[in-house]
Length: 223
Image (cartoon, rainbow, N blue to C red):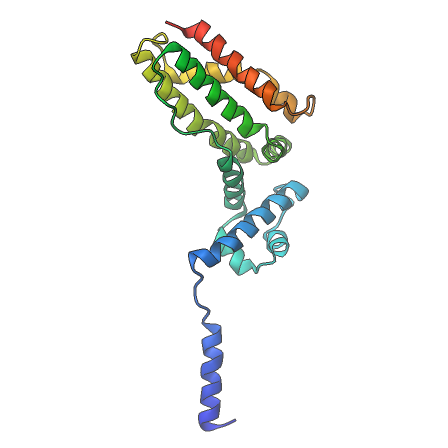
């Protein structure tokens, strides 16, 4: 092919080489596939033992596409943890309590949401993964703990600050009070779950646990 025919062929090849950028709707399924593949690879091979090629192969994408989703393995891991934990995160704002009884109900409901968010097989698998990788990749545990605690504790702290102003609980550092509520709520349950010393509690047991934590907290801090 010479002349005009050859020129048209070159233009066609050039057009195919200039791939149109994906829209957000087109990009999201690939991103989800890469995130799921990354988490599965990390669980199977560990963080250090997983390569970007492993993730790309499992997700059935090119390494170029992989880097469109994330620039590094660490970032991929953080995204994967955020996706899993974020879907089960407790409410970020608690309703304003109008009485001590209403505050007890709010604390119990919040506590149940926290327990449910962690007493999930996938999330527990992340905690076990973080424990195994604690020496080689401590950032995994830090990221998981921050995602679980920070937003939830901030929401609880704001609710406790309002409860102090309304005279339902004693004055004090709301962040420290939120930590105390978390300690009453969990005890050693999370450790025992991670170590597979106990089975996942049923909903009724979690509900009872959250109610007892709320009652103990108000006994400790009630005005």
